[in-house]
Image (cartoon, rainbow, N blue to C red; front, top):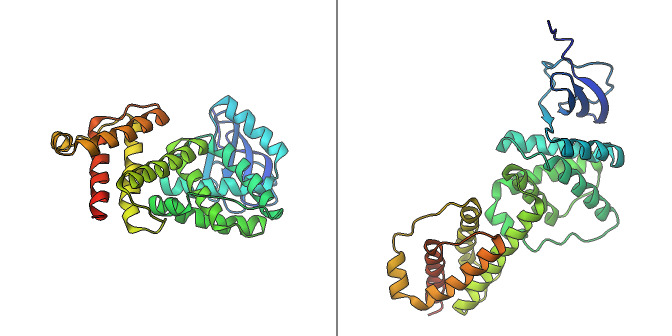
Length: 283
């Protein structure tokens, strides 16, 4: 019969004062354990019901687990540790996260901290867009920036807060940071297309932009998920505003190419409505 002692977590490496790499005999593999003071002066096995434990992250895919273990040998434990603390905050706020976040966030933080220490800029052309579209993730990224400053020293720019917000969003959606960045670029390009077709120009703080950006974000989410939203006025849009519908169709075809997913006529109809509204604002 198994005992609690048999199932105790066996510490392998303290990553920082609050994060520990351990072996879990219950699953027969290495796990990441997060909890205040768990990595400070580790002296022996830790019971699975230890009240200090906040979260145990387990990487089930062998490829991810091996890569993470290599990171613990090549990256600073402080960097990996703060990345895991940030993911613990995100998991508490949003729920289960994708495994690859444990790899990509640590690697990203290591590169970012190095750039900041060298005085190199961190460009983020999507900052205003991220602040508008993902306020919860951006606020959580603000906590992450404060945590990084406390654990690693130095001050990260606001642009990095936006990038971290995308990392947290991608972890929750189980999408890579590269995919998230491509979606942000497509949102920006699509908004620019609609503005150009309407004969207007706008800046990041233009109130006309927010409604368009919010719709494009939701549209991309639906397109990627393969879901469709019925447009009850599609036939009317197509018959009464053929020019706007044709222009919106060109945008829909471009989005379909970039996302490698079909864009329905229903969605094209909504894009045509946005184009029509923007044109009316100029008259």
